[in-house]
Length: 390
Image (cartoon, rainbow, N blue to C red; front, side, top):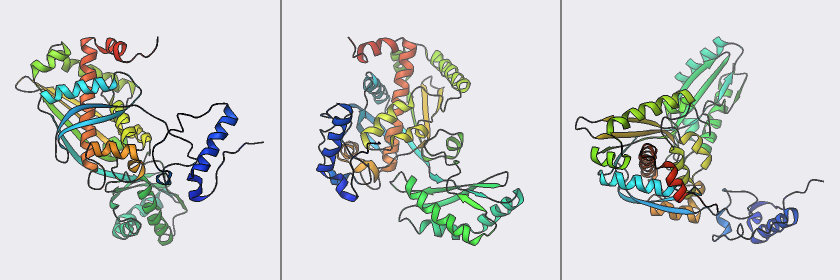
């Protein structure tokens, strides 16, 4: 007989009694007493909407790196970056990159685009009906926009992309979502709009709220090109002598190595031509209460380098689909809220600031790892900081 996990309905499921019942269930079924899982420091009434069947916590160590100097439009000044990770060397590596970029005058950051999608698909009897539907959608955009925005205070429908295939019309509804990541927000808004479309366009045979062209929590070229979340660039100019000192390699070799790495990424079919953007993004996502599965999209990165006319090293990285929030979801949980407050990024009106800080952090990690590989420090650094085995 299937043994079900103890639970009850509504807010009672978040009571200490129900948590204790589930912890006893773990002991009974597995023989493991969840002592460390049970050591949490927040009130349980904060959890509804964040988790079901709450049974304890996962304690991930947080290291501090910095100062990170950012010369952004939203993030300006020096920041100390909380990184939640169990990978030795990671915090040390990012800290080294931050030191290099600090001595170079800091990192300039720019948020250039903002979009969150839901992508329904409408099915017709044939391709011509699908084409005619596309024209109808374009002509009725303002009404569709009003229907979608009736469900949200902050979500705004910017445009609807059209991708016909066979007898289907795939649509990508593009929204701005304020300081929320917005996946659920745009899902509700698009559902309301689609129901109105279905009632007012009889030729629709059926539709699905997602035809998978939003590529939610999946790497995709369409989001790299069209943006999902924030499109943010971090760039810096590192003096030649400073870069050559840390890499112990001439600058022209660094440029050539970047070309070699880009070719390797292309051959592998990777979602970026950088080194390890997912490392810093994941560590910051865990620390600040982001939806960590969004790393699948957010880790896409476009790296570009060149030698400046003065002979220095220009390095930039663009994150075309960075999905972050400073309000709602896991950002309000106590530890995650503290980390956002350390960055000055908790609450409304702060999401672009957080996006700039994350992009700047990623740039530091790229500089540090890239120079370590060329200088021969990659393996020795992991031996020094990353080994916890006898």
